[in-house]
Length: 302
Image (cartoon, rainbow, N blue to C red; front, side, top):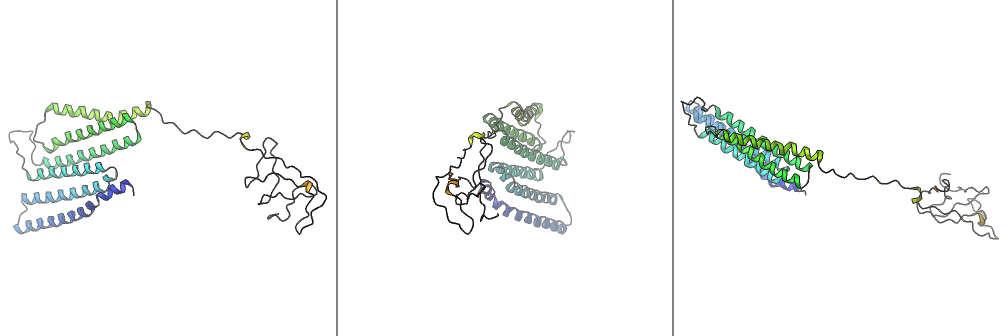
């Protein structure tokens, strides 16, 4: 069992719990509709209840995705994704149930109509931050080394700081953060872009190159073992009897070379590509005919 399978199995209970939350949220939305029909009006409280139910459904679906997909990338990345979803849930509940104090004399004050759009922008910023972290992690897998490891950690911290810095003004639109705050966010964004794009690109162009495997050197003809030439045996006075297959020639014509070490004959490159004397599968040389050629009588295929 791999590590990824273990990490995904740790969040298996989430996949069983979140569908029940979605079903419960739909039932709650139906009850709110029944309540509005009974009282005869759809007031502000009903809208807030509908918004809360929709927020719970969104949180369940996003958490389901984080537990099923984000956990496959890294265990801590899945935890960060779930924490981000919880942060969005708390911010959404605050925007729904906490009334915004608007100064009527301030023409630049954000009214209640801005709160849903601010929360949608908050969702976009946080999810883009998670996507940015995933991009940095892929960069770390491609470019390994002590320098790139430190650059990756610094870039991850910058991504977290930039995401948090952009999300806080969206969660608290009535707070004036001033010009200095946005200047700092611009500096963080520039450094974040530097760590994400420029440094890996520079490392690729001017960093140490990976050594490519060298091909095997070509074999020289002299590296192979040279077969020995057949040596004639001493002559004998008697002749071998005739058999059913073929007549056995005189013993003086039978080669007595060493049995081959391979199933196929070897080539003698230095001697002009001469073949060895053919042999049976047992290693015994074939008989010699009267003209000096091998006698293939009885050999399968001849």
